[in-house]
Image (tube, rainbow, N blue to C red; front, side):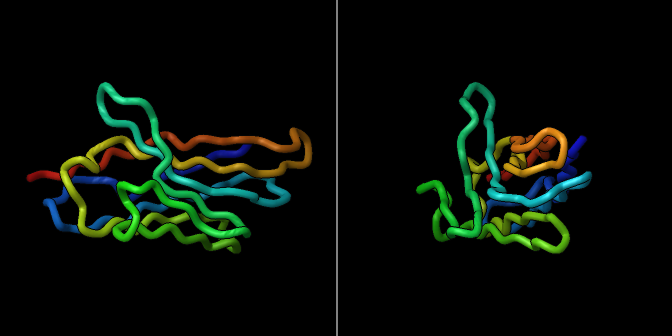
Length: 119
């Protein structure tokens, strides 16, 4: 019903920047929380950043380097990633908590986009 389309991943040198985008499409009443998670090989998926009407939250490892923002009119969340480090290399997943007419409250995941930071 609801689909998340991610973009912006790629290969970047350490110290560089990337901007990830995630757009939600479909019939949506409202969006509560939008966030980004990442999963590196052999590691568990972890929260990177999230944003809601109540504010923003970041993982300690990215605080001060990453910025999450939201365009409510476009149902889109962004992750501006600056000062990238090799340890940021992972598949990044968009996650959205939203309300739909038929299914009510849903948690939806994007397909993932690979971010590779070279030394």
